[in-house]
Image (tube, rainbow, N blue to C red; front, side, top):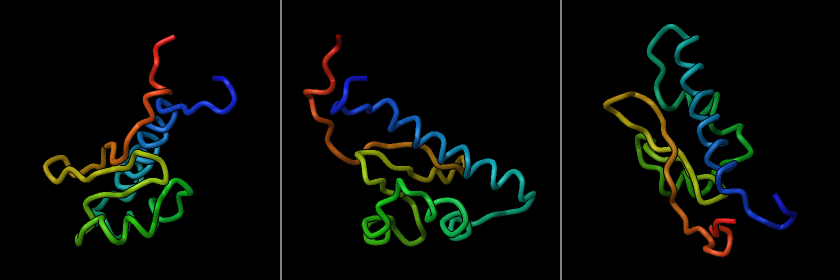
Length: 98
């Protein structure tokens, strides 16, 4: 990837990695883990997070986590997991197929 370009694919991969980390945390706990515990132990320490926006717009109980980039994680209650979503615009200049 050329210097100065935006790698949206890598951003989505980072979101999936954090989702996997949360899933592994729950699996390894061997018990019910609520989203407050996941926030404290897994999500809040991540440098990807926009903590202020997540606190303002993430919901109570927590349903969405916003990253500093255009992505984040949203909670799926029916699956009891977190999956990536896009909350911001993508720059079309970086979406051209080469």
